Length: 147
Picture 1: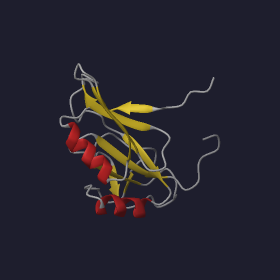
Picture 2: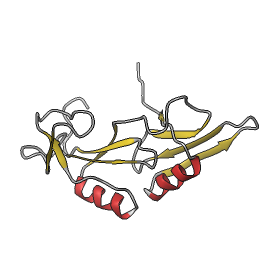
Picture 3: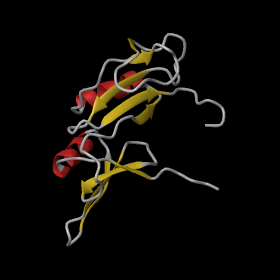
Picture 4: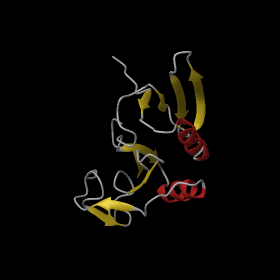
């Protein structure tokens, strides 16, 4: 069986504000549809990604800003961070987890700076959209076998 992640629905409070935010970050706007009954679907895709995000009106009962831990992968986290900042995102400094494996929720267990022993899977930066939906940048230069 072949299954691919296509979209993730994120809850937002102001669709147009979110649309402008993600477009400013260079996410490709794939769709902005409205139905006669008030459904609105906006789909945006991060640069280079096969998966997209969807937000809008009447799409989810989740509270705006409640989605956390969305990961954007890059081979050059410093350059990606700089470009996101230039485009208006408030991105954290680079960090890594004290335990050296993935990372804890929130800011717990973070150590300032890139991972000292690896250029892949260990270095992160984070930011949030206007509602507080949380994104994590993760640097992966060399993928682990099978990924």
